[in-house]
Image (cartoon, rainbow, N blue to C red; front, side):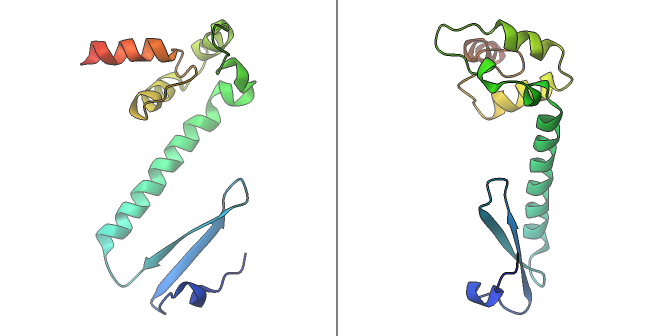
Length: 124
């Protein structure tokens, strides 16, 4: 997509990187290549972290199944979701993500919200 960086007030020493996310919305970042390497390194590190998250999420078995199994109605069965998790290669990454991001709903890494809460309490 062509983008006029002058409309952003971008100086000639800067470059704007504009992309479309999966929903078609624009997002962008303006980098000053002449300035602060530590800030640019932070941006790159953040992008790599997102890539790592996307990598395990793309390989997760749940990405290939009905998401409703992982977010059942109150009182609904979690058995099918937990069965799928048991055979998943990224189960540990999933659980680590859920604990780090305080996911409150659904089955993550083979555990329900209640089970994750108990696990956190034992770890403290």
